[in-house]
Length: 309
Image (cartoon, rainbow, N blue to C red; front, side, top):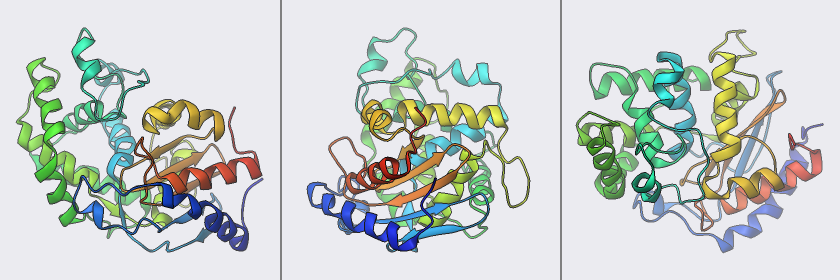
């Protein structure tokens, strides 16, 4: 069962939007602090091509941590699985997404999973190419193919804002470099990573990317296998166990779908074999997840029994 009624989806959005008053935009990245905390929009993309939406779905949002799922898929397509997971683990963490604590206590000092910042930096480090621009274009081309839009680009203001303020991520990079987990220039890696996070799209495109993951990497429109099935499965598993930062366990119990959030207020959902979801609600809870977006997913999951558990 699924929501194909625009009127019903609009009702869910209006109900969930009440939660936005209890959240806060990510103003520690100055460019993201300009967002309207009361915004909330959603798109649901079905394999048959139908897309149901509500709210200001044309508003562009930067992917932020949602990009971690896409970069992981790309790197796993380019490199051997053992090589990737020799540098980053597969375990959830109860720590905040930008924590350095576990790196200091783990031996070897590799990040616990690819969905926390330290792990995502390692994954981005593994993107192949001769320089930053070459590597970024490789990732961007992959994003364009998944979203079926050749015009997708980055928000230059957000990219610069993040690059100028990402001192904690730099600290993570230097720690990883000291322990030989990465071996490239930190500023070049930060340039690539902040551009990755600043890739922007609207909810309709985000929902389509989620739909590709929901369909085990296959594009129903073209029939092409854009992501090998076993890699799409790995990515969805990380979305379930680690995708909502250190609220992933509660999210799995209450909502129970593979999802990945970003501090711009975006959430990408992939309901297995059913549809993809794209949400934008920039008011965040204390864990860094869209507070109204999570409420919206909770309403959908309860109404349509979407939980995979």
